[in-house]
Amino acid sequence: MIEVNEQLEKNWEKLLDTLQSMVGKRPEDLNSVLFLIGVQELGKGPLHFTKEQKQDLMHIATCKVLSLSGFYTLEGLDKDGWPHWKLNEKLPRISLISQENVLREHVLRYFGEELGIFL
Image 1 (tube, rainbow, N blue to C red):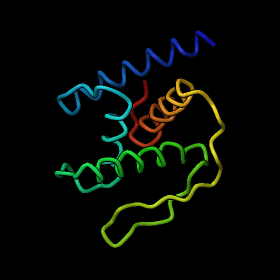
Image 2: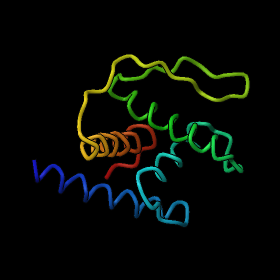
Image 3: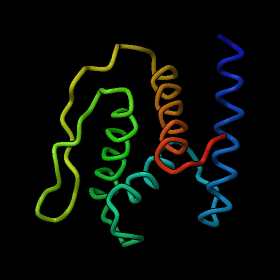
Image 4: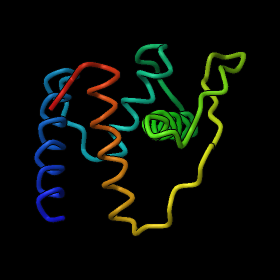
């Protein structure tokens, strides 16, 4: 288990380095990366977002990356073009650290499968 976490950490750092070279700023944490994914998935480019919209973008990203394992399905877009997701399967109850690791693994998978950035 330690090796998996070490490899996850190495790949995560590589992703942060890659994102820094792409957007000009290194994301601070998982939430920052989720925000970037949310903006990507919304597809409207870099806009000024309210605090509530930023939270919505992180939710969109979380649903998108977890959809890769079937936890969510895209239901469609609302009249403003924002995606809405349906929960297919509840996530297992795990510790906060394990939750973050699961999200990181899915984020890495997202960048590989959806954007062709394999680490």
